[in-house]
Image (cartoon, rainbow, N blue to C red):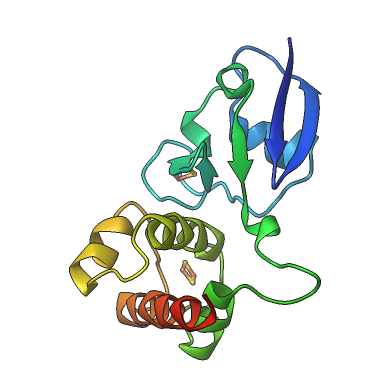
Length: 156
Ligand code: FES
Ligand code: FES
């Protein structure tokens, strides 16, 4: 079936199979490769996208379900060649090593800061609880999200 959705504000139309996941369609048909495939079964958060305003594991969404959805991926963060404050904060706080998990963390962090511009440490931990990282300490990731909140507050 042919489905339509928007990705980072651009309208897309794509032919999908009933059993394909949104993650597969993004990566293999649209070459939107920011969302990563880690576990493939909803446990690691590497495939997180913002789906109709909420962070969701795209490996758990069947592509036909995404008809009409608004999808945001890490590719949409950079504007006019300028990094988003969340990206800047992750770099400044050394909040990644291999980077495989980072697009998912950035999406969960963005969704959090959109609904709660000044989250507590506990709220950040809760919002990132579905994202796993195997090589960076979570402390630096939490600090980066706090710093991103400050930067975004300062710029608004
Ligand atoms: S690849 Fe989707 S949660 Fe791990
Ligand atoms: S930076 Fe390597 S898994 Fe998180």
